[in-house]
Image (cartoon, rainbow, N blue to C red; front, side, top):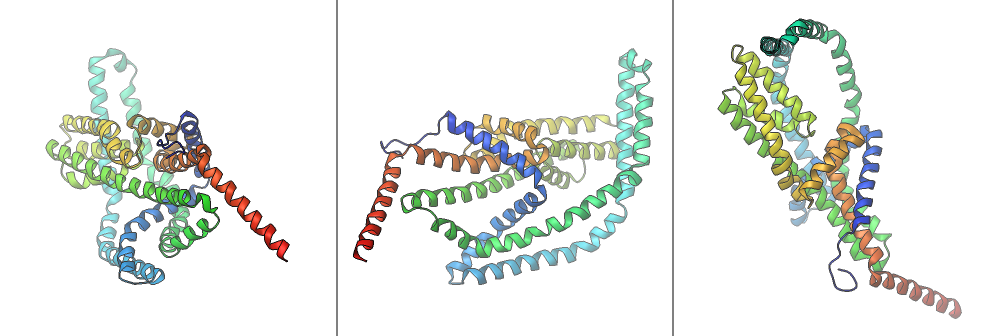
Length: 376
């Protein structure tokens, strides 16, 4: 509320500043991605475990003990799951290379068949020998894929491992010391702005929490739609493929393309003489992609951040243009946080009552100081 009693509404200058600040933050995040990624993972862990800590706090357990017990419980669950899943994972990993080459071969056959159909329909494509050149290039690529790209992929995983290991440590200290850091910041705020600063912190926390909740809701909707569509098409393992591709969709557009290629390779390999199954899978992904952009995302992630659907879609493109794949993933939560801060700053600058309270408080402090000096 402003001094006139009317609710505050951000104007065009505030919105322009919010979008500009979002672009700057995304550009900077791209430069320190090694720290941003584990911090995002730590936030996810923090918001998952925070309700358990709150339950312990309500039972009279201290902050430090509650954080320690919840962290130990989470580590125990993770360790037990890893021990149970490792034998199956190791057994499957041995056959991964053969399975990957088999599915890639199915994809090549599908592509060659599609090129043959095009050559029969259009004579100029047959004259260009495009199919033979494509088969030759793809064959050479997959033949030398392991020796050319796997070492670099392995080195990338090794290079990122220390950074990713920061996530559980960051999450633990967020659980244990988050309230201390919040109190430390509030101590530096003048009394006239205390309520508004407390509101900003609560809204920033709510925005981040609601974003991840909306992301999980979006993943559930995508999984249900994709699994139902793949099951209707006749592809085996529809639920697993739907879940994997829904998680890949956390990276907007690029993740959906990778998930679509994965399902098309499976369809082309399992149904070698039925290219219509692969084409149906592509149509399904295009349909779900449209649902994501115009229905699911505005209703889940966009609604949780209180953003207009048009702004949600446009900012995804802006984030990708500014910071690539990291920008696609981070643009919505960053914009949501900056919107809260920007609108609050706009309110402070336009609320004459708050500024008058601050000036009056400073005048009283100076008068008290002058009075004490006179008494001395």
